[in-house]
Length: 241
Ligand code: C5P
Image 1 (cartoon, helix red, strand yellow):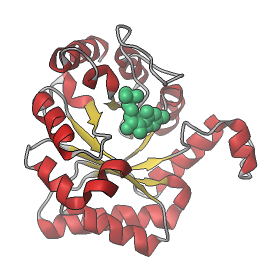
Image 2: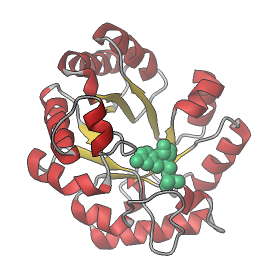
Image 3: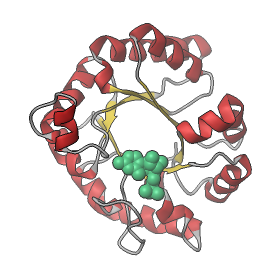
């Protein structure tokens, strides 16, 4: 990852079409920090598809949100390391032993392969869930309390940080200190359409609040000039940092 302000930006490749994904990568290489590959791309195109993207030499956030028994998650983490991701993630709701197994597997396998260990992040509460959804699954208390509880557990289990919504950046920064990594989606510059995102932050505001990494999709990929959009967002981040 470069040290440019744009290096904080990860652009999702949410497509089952390798040609389309490669087009985005070629356009944005050197202009953003990396790309995010999630379940849609991975299920359609598999590790071979990921390798095709990695040939382009873009840092990878492998957003597969593992959640299973510790042994299985450790195996999945091990299997993902050879793809060379910069960031991977697991569900914090999988619990302490599962997260600790993920962290250890990432460390071990990276060392074995002579690769840099990826950041291992926890997913706390999906932003698609509101208070009543949490009550339905037996979680009392506020969403923020649950997010902070799971983030503390993630840190105690050896994870490097969490994925969080813009609304949660400040309470998490306050609770977990400056070194815990916070990665935030739901970002729109003022000049981009909000799309289906409801609670959005601008890139500058997210960085001011304490986000380390931003997932930014359509504001860049749907722009008339995606490189220019990334550059403008980078300038906004630089001003805010
Ligand atoms: O910036 P844009 O809304 O286009 O980014 C969409 C990407 O961010 C998708 O990959 C989506 O999974 C991810 N995401 C999100 N909102 C969340 C969590 C993740 O849009 N709350």
